Image 1 (cartoon, rainbow, N blue to C red):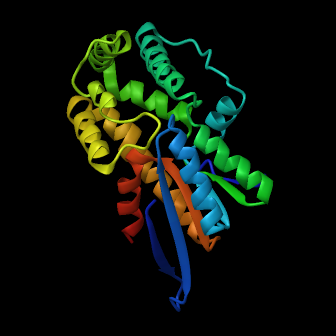
Image 2 (image 1 turned 120 degrees about the horizontal axis):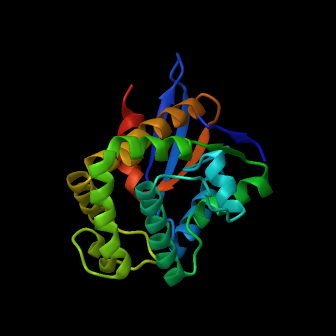
Length: 237
């Protein structure tokens, strides 16, 4: 497997001094626990025959997912409690779909490996992201998030989290629902939105632009909440 990077919308990107070389990027928005996501990824790859498959992973997260590893890093109580609750919530949702979280990413990498297609891990290092998030939240931000997660974990309906009940977990949510969720996240937890969405969008868009210099056709597999942000950044010069 050829890996680049630590470091279903479509359009053509023209590059080069003579503007004759066409770079094609195909972005597949997914839900990390939806069976539909796996099918969407396979369809896009089979149809587009990419030179490179870029996925919303970094190498640490990839190997942790591949070998079903869980972090055992010693953390302060609040940080540990937040991460455990978030992980348990995702696991509970994934049990309803029988899909391991991020399986569509692993499927994309597996396809690339089997077919000799280059793979690019375009996401920011997960350890850096978590460290930065906890730093940006501060004590009261962490406490607020913990108090937000506990009711959701035990099944008490709360604003924002109840959106999950509005769509089929086996399918990728539609754009309007995704936008509502992002607006809610930005309002309730602006620091989380900044670190997990905006900063990672910028990081991934930069890496995709680098890949454009090397490959003609690229299939990009990212969570649906990142699609519009990355698209906007890629259109910027």
